[in-house]
Length: 191
Image 1: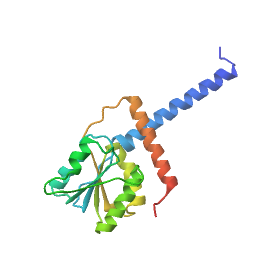
Image 2 (image 1 turned 90 degrees about the vertical axis):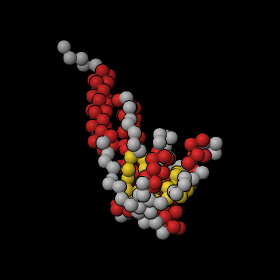
Image 3 (image 1 turned 30 degrees about the horizontal axis):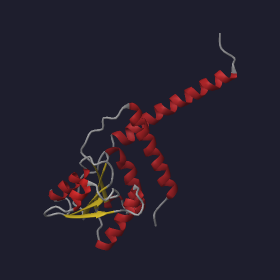
């Protein structure tokens, strides 16, 4: 016999909607973020390493420069002044110019704005951006808004690492990336 309790019917309807949203979020997030394809590397004027975990990204950016992809590495440095990793990498590397900058806005948008100013100052056109694989689509969108609308001015590449996230961690990651896309769309271009 089917329940006629209105409260139970509302609860069941909400539960169905929540499950559908989570399944859709997971499917879309997996396609858009987990398997985001990096751009093919191209020679550039500089390599920008976006802030995040100290997961090897700083050393990866320097390694790309040593391999000849660009002569300069720009490290986004929103970390405390006593951060050991940034102290080490900001001291410089033989044969590679290393510039550490603290963006005014401690966001991907702030990093793109700071890089645009540095690029204008140094007449740079093409840059390589190092970030998490799942962050590349959103970073690409923001850099088109704030660095250059020309898609070929920015080459996105991923930190070489694996992500051993649980299902709830992936759900939160996807939700955060979708929310970040919505925020960037609302904010619009930086000009």
